[in-house]
Image 1 (cartoon, rainbow, N blue to C red):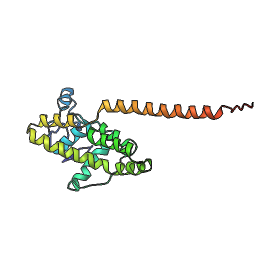
Image 2 (image 1 turned 180 degrees about the vertical axis):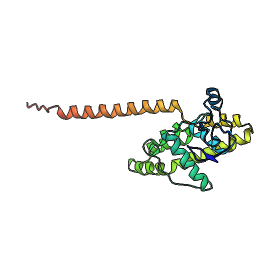
Image 3 (image 1 turned 90 degrees about the vertical axis):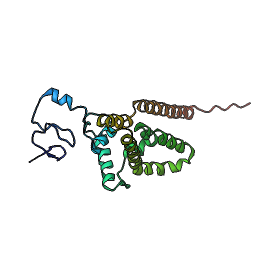
Image 4 (image 1 turned 90 degrees about the horizontal axis):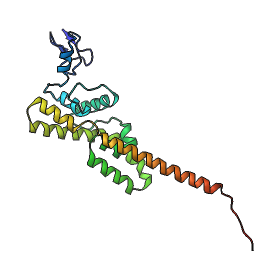
Length: 208
């Protein structure tokens, strides 16, 4: 009996790849076999979750973002879909932009609007609430998309492609957010420099 060195799932004799996470078992080194497995065909929810989080039908890259959401979603799954608190720094600092980056466009826009209309003193409270709750909001979106995906097709490849398209991140939002923050910081810098220049200008008094 052997187990996957990456996720610990039990392996069957002759498995070239782990059926749980897709990691090579080291039995074969055939490049064509590796490439053929790049498009995953498992029908289990874990594979669909991976596709949604990573935005890819292949074996997901084990980076920080993937690990964060995989752990958060898996914890909520174990809690029967209930709220499980896991802090999200990106949601705290970028709140609405982060939601749109994770393709929750409507929710992100609503939060950005809320930030502009509420008194400045409440912004920090909203940011803390976002850091605590946005993982759950994104998880609920994932469950909605998962239900729609399964209702739409029974084909594993189609399901994986659909979840990958619905999930992942938005490059366009990332670019727009970068432009927004550059312009915002530039305006603040101009205001600061203008104020400093006025403060340094000597006052002239004319007497008649």
